[in-house]
Image 1 (cartoon, rainbow, N blue to C red):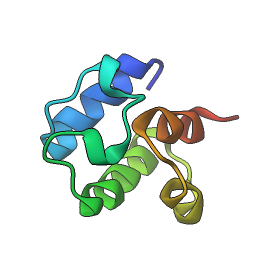
Image 2 (spheres, rainbow, N blue to C red; image 1 turned 90 degrees about the vertical axis):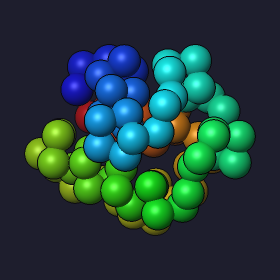
Image 3 (cartoon, one colour; image 1 turned 45 degrees about the vertical axis):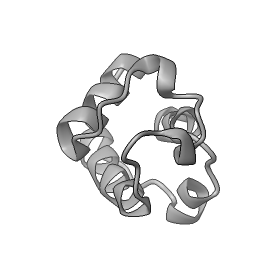
Image 4 (spheres, rainbow, N blue to C red; image 1 turned 180 degrees about the horizontal axis):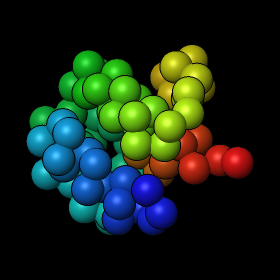
Length: 75
């Protein structure tokens, strides 16, 4: 995963939510069809994609997809 577009593709492919890169900064409550269970599915997909663990408490503190992307790509 090298870009926000790759991240968004993971969301569409793994979760099936029709989001675009422009939606990354929107609060989860503003995403059409978003459910809190999707956050756990996304975390699992990101860990598989990146090959490293991502803190669940940190992900739960994220207000939007952009913040999750920042966590997933942090060095």
